[in-house]
Image (cartoon, rainbow, N blue to C red; front, side):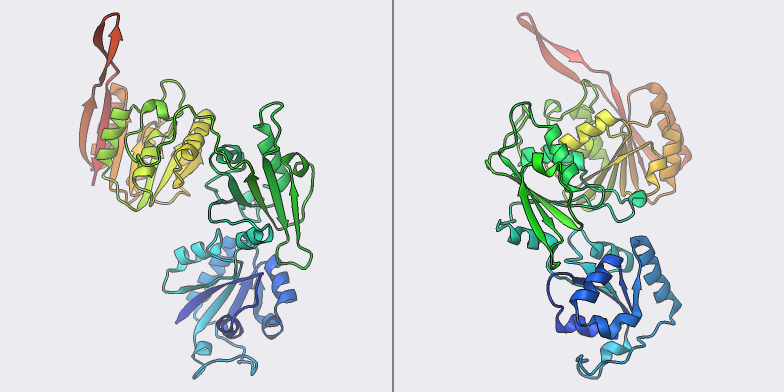
Length: 451
């Protein structure tokens, strides 16, 4: 039987079970940084140092584990030490077990999630330490149950950075919604860069007296240090790694630049003027309603919004189905800015933004259960051919022109989708002088392909 134990280290001594697993495992995987932590801070190191393997890349670590499992040649080769309790008949030593050392709590922006996704819940067990965020808030004596928690840690290899839900330039907007933010940093998203991003958005002569930044440096190490300064000071300082940043709005008010109040209890039925967008470039609310209905969305899974524009469809879907993973794909910088602002404004935390041209950027995105195409950049046929190779059941397309409508119908039929189409013609009541009239919008075609 194969088992993978992801064991958090860094802040507390490991418990009896973790000691047994570490001693009796076939291989212990770790990174350079955690190797140093394990070597200097844990007595168990001396018993198992000969079977430690250092891999600094997550993908390589996963591939190594998979290769070892499939090879069926690895044995738990080191005999139990008398100083470690096996328990009962020593059954642990008879299992082909692997230990992966992780930092703190592996399920808090850590490798635990990836391990479970790759190898399944039955094979993986998580044994967490305290998380770095817990330690950081305890050091500054600040409760963290009301904090917004985010990670800017894209991985040790800058060239192969993983996609993050929020980026460093989202922080000023997040500060308009949250008085307390904690941030896991990395070598690129350093405390000084975070401070400079905040300062970019401070109004002239207004200062940052109400904003304090804590940098919690090398937590758990003998030389850990906590620095509390203003963004102006932090912007010009250097810090040792690893470090965590905590930002506090000390006035405890929630100011906002948004003209429309945020109504958190409304999940569906946002008005066009509530959603930040470039003038005229938005899927109108009546069309959104029909398109979302046609998608027959599941409560869980993955949804792609291709050519997301301002993100109006993605926002409504994310609020309707908070457990659904919503991926908004857009190439235009201004539109991406709107999606980010709307995601923060409406607390649509389950939206992931992907910048790029479809279908090239779709290859590394989780396979969708449903797809909405609001804009194709003239590549609708390429997109549909790509989607046809996926197990996606339903795709819905919005077309504003006869030419796009014809292409969509022709290609969906060619790919053996069951197709239906609806033309939506909307007219809205307007006032002219003492009278009223209906002003018509251009009709939109909503095409659904299902299989």
